[in-house]
Amino acid sequence: MATFYYPNWWGDMPQVLYSFFDEYDFSGKTIIPFNVHNGSRFSRTIQTIEELEPGATVIEDGFTVSEQTVADAASDIAAWLEELGY
Figure 1 (cartoon, rainbow, N blue to C red):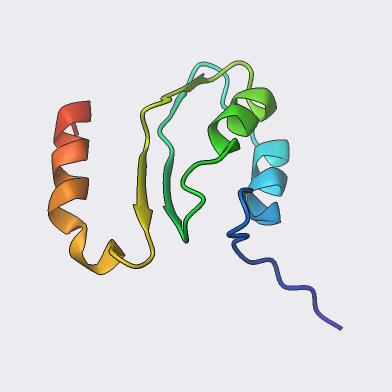
Figure 2: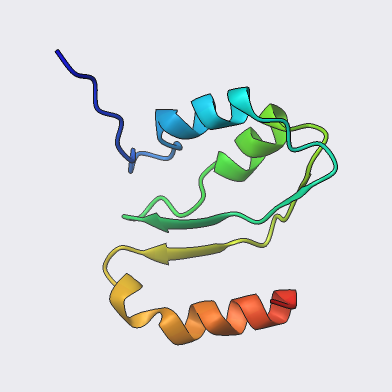
């Protein structure tokens, strides 16, 4: 039997991210959220990351894009990254 974790489009992160944040300590680091959604945008995921990684700085103005338009989002993503200085 195998268990598969997959994105949950109902306003939460995939379980694998919870495991990842449990395993690694990002204290002193900056986390920049970026996600693809099917209508839920970030929901409470940014707050969840802040709770899971209290020692990290979590950028609250992350980038989120609908799965419907992700194929055409390259220029928007590039502009967002440039605004962040990357």
